[in-house]
Each structure stands twice: as structure tokens, then as C-alpha cells.
Length: 382
Image 1 (cartoon, rainbow, N blue to C red):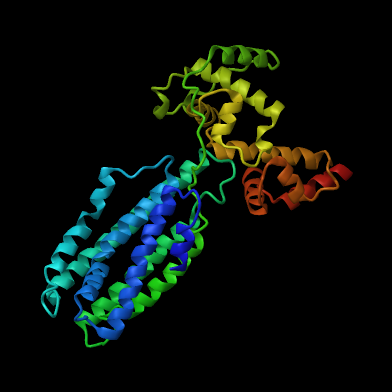
Image 2 (cartoon, rainbow, N blue to C red):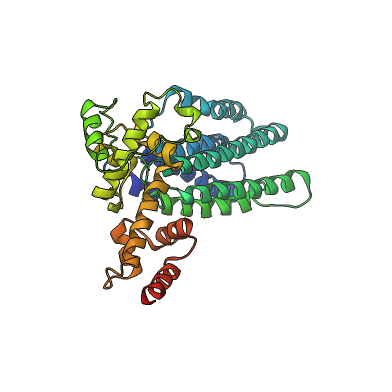
């Protein structure tokens, strides 16, 4: 209830906040049902029976809500459409079946409940696996757009997905033992699962209250085609460096075969991009994204992504962080910024955490920053 009030009072709630709020309300009803079942068993009161049956059917809601919550966090400008509502049809069907049995003092038959339980658990598992796959795809997408990704991967959501799998195992084990063995487990075999669900609620609340949509920024996509003045700027920049052969054809991807950028235009723009990076050092902005760089370079984000992918065979994340690592290397080799620590130098180059700096430096140099600094100092003394 506290989490519900906290999120409900949040100013400027996003779609992800509203989905999260709905999920919390459903979980509150579930927890209320735990109390009813543990004290009364299957209640005689019609209103309490409604609560119990809704809680039973709500397993069909948790999977779709988890999926919608993940989509709202990982998809730019995500909106709930009619096809998303169809995910809740199994819940409606289950609710109709259970409500039709409310007039019976014993509720639905054991066979009906067993069949529904099996279908519910399969549904929850399928949705959870779908979320895990979605988060894996999101990981790749994040690296195509952001230069610092640690808070964008949503690893906590992946952790929660695996937590739901563990909940699934706990609930399934309890229900199987209750229905097909002589072991008596309280709350119709759900006691252990209910306790685990309460722990899950604390975890999702801790992370979910402060989580914002990953792509919660305005895309500057007003430039839909290359403008003529870009060609002029490119020519000016190219005059300062020697021309090389065209980009290796093997780097051209099939997915770009319908792009409006020709190989020749791609070559020119990438040469201009290299000079722009060298002169302006935009990578020193720790919040640099594909869209902000595209705006500075005056090119459509899709074209910028194509240039980097084709010409360097890298995603945006690696492209930017390799430049940051090279910046740090130059400073260390020149023995500059002696008043700054390694981490201070890394922050100056655009990194926003020690972990991301160490990981990137190791990836592009094969050694840790400390090892490189020590080696550069030894070579300098010689």
C-alpha cells in the first residue's frame, strides 16, 4: 500500500509508472487473499470469494503486465494498443469459469482448478521467457544508442525475471506436492510460494519506484535526408587529410542495401566524421548518445549508425568508448594531468564510472589502466 501511494503521488508519471502501479494493485489484492485463505480457507462470504477467485485468475495478468512494463521501459514512445489488450483474454476466460462456480459452497471442482493451475503456470513461464529474450535484444539496442550503458541495461529487470522463474518453481513444487502427495502444505499448497512472492514484491518495489524509461528523451529526427551543406562541410574537412581507398566492401551489411547512402557518400561522410571527432571531441560528454552526436554532426541518426557500423564494424557504444580510451592513453603517454588520478582522467575523457572505464580500457588495450600507466611510466623513464 505504501508503494502504491508513493507511485500514485509521483508527478509526471510515465506509462511505465502506470503499468507498475497497476501491477502493485494486483499484487496487493493477491497478498490480501493470502490472509483470507490462511484464516478462513475458502470463505463463505460472496465478496471474499470474489477476491479469492480474482486472485486465482490474476496469474494470467502478471505475465502480460510484466511484458508491458518491460516494453514501456525499453521501447521509445511505447503506447498500449489493442493487440496488447488481447494478452488479457485468458484472464477474462479464467475469471468467467471461476465466477460461474461461486454459487457452489465449495467453489470450482478440484479437476477444474488443477487444469487452470497448469495453464496459468505455463502462461507465466512463457511470458517470463519472452521478457528475458526481450531484455537480451534491448542490451544490443542500448549499445547502438548510448555511450554509457550501465544504468540502461536494466539488469535488475533480468534479475526479477529469473526471480519469477524461481517463484514459478516454488509455486509449482508446492501445488504438485499438495495435489499429488500426502504432504500437507498450508494455503492449498501455496504457503511457500506466497512467502516468496512477498519477497519479490519488496524487490520489484525497491527498483521500480525510481526506474525511468530508458529511451525517455526526445529524438531529434527532423533531418530525414542529407542536406547539401553537409557535402560542402565534408569537402572542407577532407581537404585537410589525405584521401584513402574506399571502405572495404566486406564491411557493407545486407541490412543497409536499401539505404539512401551510397558507398561513395558513406566514405566521404565517415572521413568527415573522423575529423569532427578529432577536433570537437564530443565523446568527452558522458551523456553522449547517437541522437545528440547526429544533431551535432547534422546527419540523420540512422545514417550515423550506418556509417559507424559499416566503416568500423562497431556499434555506437564501442565506437565512442574506443575514442575515450585513446584519449586516456594519449594523456598517460604524454604524462599530462599529473594532478589527476586515473579515474579523474577517465571522467575527463567521458567515462562516468570506474567499472565502465576499466572494462572498456581492458577491451581495447588488453591491459588494465594501472598496468598501462605503469608500463608507460617505465618507457618514459627509459
